[in-house]
Length: 328
Image (cartoon, rainbow, N blue to C red):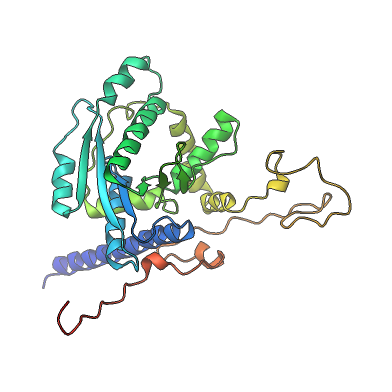
């Protein structure tokens, strides 16, 4: 065996090893999110919204994998909304979904023309586009009898939304991992809530998903979300662990130390009350620590210092079914 062949074999083994670690890490992040927020239950029919981007591809792929070993039974139906964007390759998703053998539905609605007609040239189209898309998907969920609607938003999307609301909306509000729709009819879940975008990008390359770019909004480089994304990416490069710390802050809220009178009864505070849990004394100086290091390739680091979670039930292997003597 030549030296070149040996080097190539070693590279291939390393690539396979790294890919396996990445797959396990994403699978566990999705399992943690599903378990922490009770996203999927016995008998659920989960409608996975598939846009053709890396995140929704990864979401469908990971859920299909979990479905095989989960201790509960749930079905999956993939749904794509063909918004009639010029040049949209309508054959890509059906061919991909056929190859998986997953139930799917392609919905054709010309929301592209509506957006282009209503929104002036050069203005952000995302707001109207998302409202139109949401209305269609809610309707389709009812038609399909879906009990959960799964979206492909990840941890970075959630943090970007937090800062967008702070900078431009004057709200301390992010993107919840689980919510009830405004009409109360639908449960929307985001199983990728704990997943890093950089991991999903690597996973998309590993799995060779047939990515379809969004021509409607992809040509808007000055979007506020893009500005916030660049800010967070810069922080991530210069201050490792800061992104992880910020996301943990969303899970560790102290209403008594904010300033929203609808969340906490500041007016009703009187002397003699028992101090609130998580509060600090008025004249104490806050003590802060450097951010914990981010998760390494083995999933260690931050996870070791985080509080223990409940058992990841969605990841438990399903017990083999004992066949009867009759084979029934």
